[in-house]
Length: 236
Length: 236
DNA sequence: TCAGGCGTGGCACTCAGTGCACACCACCCG
DNA sequence: CGGGTGGTGTGCACTGAGTGCCACGCCTGA
Image (cartoon, rainbow over all chains, first blue to last red; front, side):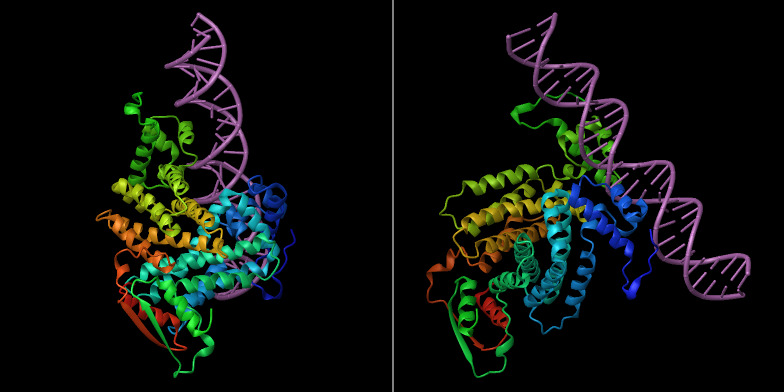
């Protein structure tokens, strides 16, 4: 094992990457459950104890960058101002996750195939996704603190955003990472935004003389009302 | 260990129940992770091997009835006719889960406290919830097969229904199972139904003179407009 | 009475994960 | 220069979950 120095100032320990690479080689050629941690460390040429220094569990080696991504998302949500439209903000936060997947399409596709067929990994992925969802929900709870049903709305909208994101992400992964991932996700998130009323407003901002009048029957489905408004406002 | 006969035709093996009882006694008095399977089988007076005959893993003993409940939900969804309103149907399916929790309030509350503080159990619960969500989503996918965005809508609505249900369920559990669980869930599910268009509408439907007029500046954030409408319509 | 199924128990084994002690290396300090 | 000192990698022994296998008792039907 060459004791390589950390080159070019990237703070990445090379050993960690070596373990991920060795793990995936074995997972792909003989399956996740058929690979023991001993196999991985043998191929990587390191001690078994070191594996658990970098990854708390065998499953963690399959999701090596989610911890960082979750931190990025939390920071992104904390950075926002109170002028941000909340639902749009959490949609943008979800796009951060997509970007991480899109950075390494082949790796992401391999991991997707792995998690699809190994129940243990699927369960682990659920707990990862759950943490993203919690981060979004906590943000929305703060932003909706004034609303009567803020907590409920926050949880539901966070779940919907995550579901839409995952739907688009998975369809992209199923296509072997061909095509542009972001368009599918944009489309899916737009659906959620339309359902929950918040639509990006950016371009039209300065024409205060334009006024829209909407007449709605009390008891009408809210989404129909929103659809009308969207149509009237000239987008959607 | 008295070799009791199966009384009154309930198809329940007594050994299974004895294991659940022994497990929860130990979990509550010394914690989940501090209790080994050996402890459980010793208290229940059975062989260690028999534990894994009834429960595939130590975690399963905490959720002894979810398997049956999931089967009930699947059957319920399969039984429905094509005339059912789909979103209403999945909401009713979610209420089945609530009913299971409400059948044993004290047990449900104990389990809730346990899962809240043991990460491993939380992860396991996620995979249980995921299976419910999949069942709902599969049903909606079938019902929405004709829609352009049927798959996306099915996944998003299923996630929203589950999130709303869980939000209400947890608030009920946090109150130690006091009060009526169903009212909170009804309320939460009504919010989801209003967001996704299928509104029961029953009582208000016949008053076409109730009209809401909203005046909005073009370019105003749509979510602000929606907030006004929600307030005016008297929900939210 | 014997044959065969079934529920159960015991035993040994694999493997993930942990605690602990030790070795090595860099850097700092007197 | 010698001796701390902290971080990082390693070896070892141990716990505990989960599994495969086989043997035993029990019940049932031929």
